[in-house]
Image (cartoon, rainbow, N blue to C red; front, side, top):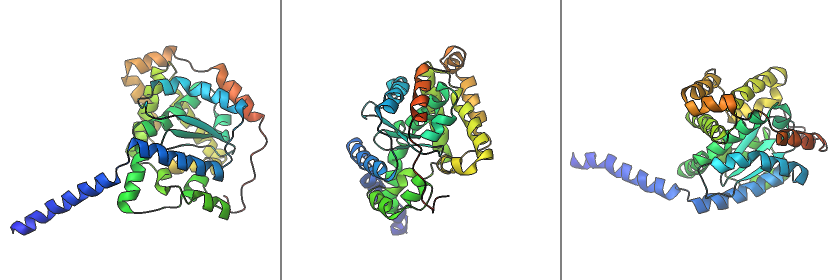
Length: 276
């Protein structure tokens, strides 16, 4: 009997050892993030035009200034696709699509979405995806998750080095925590935090008109009926957020500069035939 009782303890101990072995250090997170970013840069039409990068960097600077993690070299990039999406990978690399920038109508909407993605990294949700993958020794179709379709041969080769679980669907709890982080960051940066709920409303409208354009966003950011209401409740319960909603910036010239730069870009590359 004593031996039987010791088996759960032994299993628990081995589980702790396995968890420790799977833990991702900050240095490793940065190194892996750089590898993933290089793969994304190869597989997706990432924009490197200074006319786009400069206003994007200016737009996110207030958010980075209030992010809790100072151990990461935050980078933000625009992907030249009409799909409406934003995603984060470990190491502080965050991507937003041309389609999302074009559908946003004010600075606080874009800032809130980027604040949400910063939250995923700040709260180590992206790093924990790697840890989960290691613990389970599983791989999933990264190309499908990132691209929203089956990747071509060249894309598959580029994406082989990327840990697929990084872009897996976040849990409802992680999404809620990132929403709350986005509210905190915009509030601390003096930006109207209602932008996140406003952007969710826009995304729902886009979904009704062009479901394919929004499919990737809802695949990686599960939307529930209560999510918008939860953001509004979070703002209402926080005196600082309520004040920012009244006096914070809703719009900014840098946002419109970014939109003009994006509009001036060449059309996005055509999607492969196997794309939805």
